[in-house]
Image (tube, rainbow, N blue to C red; front, top):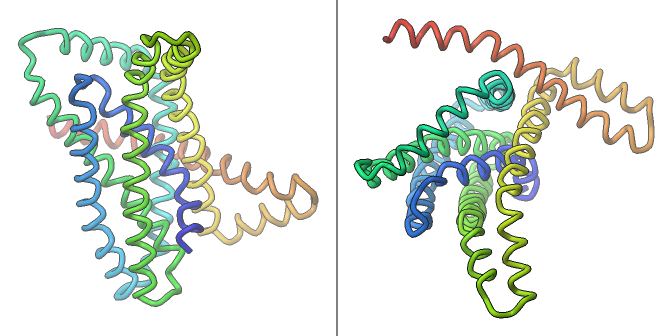
Amino acid sequence: MTKTATKKTAGVLGDDLALNAQQVTGVKPARELPVVWAVAKGSMLNKAILVPAALAISYFVPWLVVPLLMLGGAFLCFEGFEKLAHKFLHRQEAEAHKKELHEALKNPGVDMKELERDKIKGAIRTDFILSAEIIAITLGTVAGESIGMQFLVLAVVAIMITVVVYGLVAGIVKLDDGGLYLSQQDNEAVQKVGRGILWLAPYMMKTLSIVGTIAMFLVGGGILTHGLPPVYEAIHHFAQGLGGVPEIIVPTLANGVFGVIAGTLLVAVITPLQKLWAARSA
């Protein structure tokens, strides 16, 4: 059951990994691992809150599990399409923000400790949302089991995911340092490996982000289609008529397309409301 739950949370894990690795960029190299550790502790605290809350929902209001899953799937699709829209429609704004951050880091008057605290707080907030989605998907996987089994699976998934994600984040943020160290060794073969790592590191970050976004649509769309029986049955009835490999691939692709459509509609509706709320608050 833990294995099944982990597979279903793959989309969120990819995005969690990419987002957290990006969150700690801009920190001084000597402070990268302490920042990752601080965020990892915050992540464990998030899950210590979310797991009991999920169990309480499962025990007292089990009918709420499916709507929460649907809400989580919709959030994944919304966030995935929002990332695409921001990348392609607001490219200049993103570049300007990156440039401002770069200049701020060069300024000796900038309080690096305050910047570090802000990064940690932002990463923990992001982790709470993604952890809630992971716990919701896991809960949906074990909803029919006893409360004791639900607790065991939720606890194992929560601990395992935190260790794996933040272990990988720590490795990714120190990858360039490892490559630099190897490139300065006397052995020519080791130097080549180091230079290869230095070349690979930025592409790995980009790949993680792309794979994470694609997985968000696949997982989010899959959750939504499962919660809408007519759509789910139509997709699988069409796929069964194809047979062979297409029968396996088509439902996954259809889930992704449904996720993109859902994300498009949600961004079209929610973004104007967000701007209206921000204008009223100002």
